[in-house]
Image (tube, rainbow, N blue to C red; front, side, top):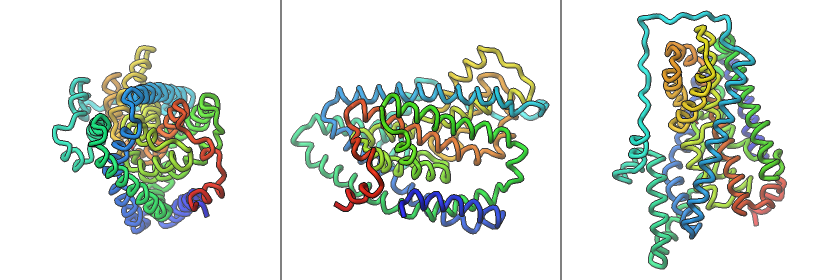
Length: 412
Ligand code: ASP
């Protein structure tokens, strides 16, 4: 049976078992944790080796700059569309209407300070690359890997042996990813059972409207916006795109970490979508770090929800501020569970909305995180397809191939 079918069955089974067992489903969590740990084990070496190889395989520094710029522009514009969808959903469904919450004067949660632009740029450069690797600071790892890749390319013949080592290590990491992904159905079963058991149906109902607004927004963004863009701009069959993203989306849904899903995302881009190694290993780690469409959409919905719940009227200027700060906040959001909630405080403070709102959303954040992380990953994949196609580095035969012929290619 294909992996994606097993994963879907595991999610449904896990959800059912979790609801049946209730909080006792906690005992199944270690199976999920084991899977998450295995996947985390892959991230740093995979990102580092595949980025170095991605750069050295391009041979041409100008091309790298062009691809970087294209990815950045696509990442920013898709994020702006996502927030707009989020704001629209919250305006149409008005999830906070009728809640009539008031701000308690005593409670003044501490807002996260927004780092300045200069600080952000300075923080991107690792003072000690080994520290960055040990700490798993993806942005710093990206900067170092890009630098090393460019330098090795410029070194020419003398750099070849090192490039070969990275190429061979990267292949090993891809293989290890494949092996770990074979365990995905079990890990996903354990995680789904735990979440469904912990949250059950009770907690979902009171804030059901927010959940509905975020989920419908996410579905619209993927099925409407991404699929249409794949069909109209890349001129590819959107159904293939949707099918190819099932594995990484399911991993994202259950682990709620786009950095953690990165190995599965890279695998899907290469094997399901036919995106070249060079493009996928460059565009996807960048996307997993800075492109968070789902998070931006969620911040749009939550900001309006909180405004409605506390009866705050927002002006057109406030809406513009929400779009701008949500875009920046989503870039700064780390691809780890719950990071979007912390960054929501930044958006609320900028627009002057009560931070008490965070406490209401926090109760259901895991459920919202599942949807937004999946969208974050689907967005990265969509951009890798667009960039790959525009650079002539997308193998349409792989993209359009049926399941059986893909298996045959792998066997051959
Ligand atoms: N969990 C999300 C991710 O990893 C980030 C967030 O909390 O919004 O993509």
